[in-house]
Image 1 (cartoon, one colour):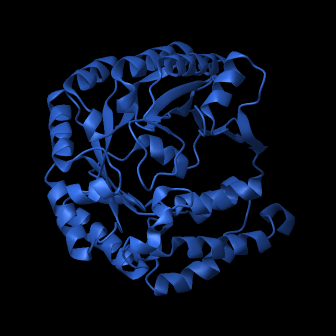
Image 2: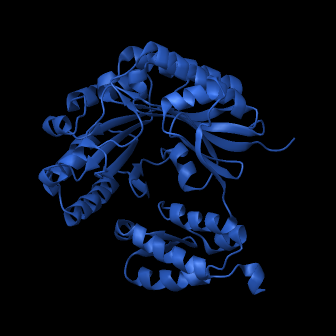
Image 3: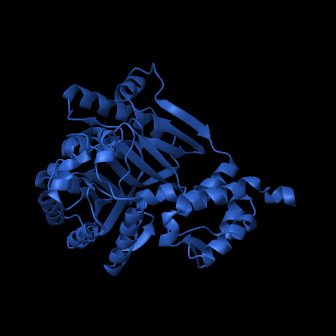
Length: 393
C-alpha cells in the first residue's frame, strides 16, 4: 500500500457580525440568513464529496475554519460541516483542527461543543488591548471580552490558543505598542501573530486614511522589531515573518502554505494547491452555491498548472518567510536549478546583517524580514536569468 500523503484543508466561513474598517477579506457582514446558511452548507457538502473522491491517497492532518468569523457562524453549523468533512476525507487521529473566533461570539457552550467534536486550536482576533482603538477599527468587542474568551477556552480544555494583534494602528505610538505586547503576553497564549496594519483599497479605512494619523513606515519598522525582541524574551520563537510560538505550537496548517505543501480550500475566495494545480474559487457566495448545487456556473476564478521554474521561485519566496529558510542542496535537488546565482547575492547581504547561515540553510534576520519583498525580488530576478542544471551539463 502506498504511503498516504499529508493534506491541509481550509474552510471559509464568509459570515461575520460586522465588517471591520480595514477588512478586505471576502465576507458578509451582519448576515446569518437561515436559507443562505443552509444552502451554503449543502454546497460545501457537495464540494467535499466531489473533492474527497480525488483525495483517497491523502490523509488530512490539518483543518482550518477561517473567515469571516467562524465563531459567529455557531457551533452547531461548524460541527455539521466538520462531521461531513470526516465522512468524505481520511482524517489523521492527531490532526490540528483550528477555528477562528472573535471575543464577542465566544461562549462556554460554543467552546464545549467544539472541543467535544475534536477541535483543538482556537485563533482569537484580539488586535488591541485599547477599547477606543478597537471601536475605531470597527471591532465588535472589548479587550475584557478577549481576556474572558481566553479564560473560557482554558476551562473548556483548549491548550493551544493563538492571539492576533495588529500594530501601526491610528494614533498608536511605539510605547503604546510595547505596552500592548506586555499586557497581552500575560494571557499566556501558545502562539501569537503580529501583523502591521495594511490599508487596502475598497475598505472604509481607505477613504479616510489621510486623516487617521497612521504611524510612519519607520515607526512601524520599530514596532515590528520591538515585537520580535519582547516575544523572544517571553519564550516565543519567531518561526515566520509575523508569527511567534512557544516550542511545539507553530501553526501546522499555515506552515503548509509557507513550505509548499498541498492544501484544498473550500468556500468562496478560498485557494488550493493540490495535485500539481493551483486554483481559486470566485469570491461570490451565491455563485459558489449555484455552481455546486445546480452545476450550471463555474466556481473557479483561476486554475493553472505551475511549471518547475515558478515552483522554484515560490520555494525561495515562501521559505524565506520562515525560520527554516532555503537550502542549496534542497533547491538544486528539487528544482534542478543552480543555487550559485542566488548565493552571489546572499553573501553580501549576509555581511550587511540581512541573512544568517544556520545548519546549512540561509534564513533572513529580523532586519532582513523588514525588506523581504525587495530581497526576494532580487533573488527571483537572478533565478529567471539562470539556466537549469541539466542544460548546463
